[in-house]
Length: 146
Image (tube, rainbow, N blue to C red; front, side, top):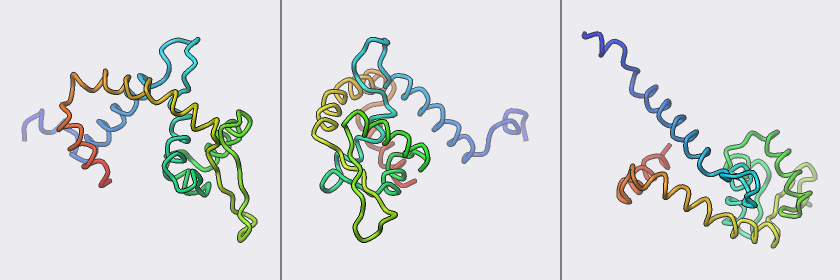
């Protein structure tokens, strides 16, 4: 075994490191470039985007936590902030008093529509010189399996 082989990370660990690095780099580019930019950051998009595609633009809180990749306690704080902003409403479940839905409001949908061009543009600028459209589609399909 050569020294370079001995120091190489196992494939699963190397993949995890690459995913974490890619995520960090992309999130840094998604957030507004200047403090006075009026576009919402990726932490808000992570919550609004899954709601926008859900039936009736609402999801149970635990489902939204899973889809937005935010811890349940972290999601509660984010949703509280979005409720205060008028972008999300909480709806309590009649069948299960402990259960609650988060529902995207018209104001929240409008804010998401306003922010997405910025986020898509930032992603395309960052990715286009690194990956072809075919490679992006392949990577998306592969990562979706995980």
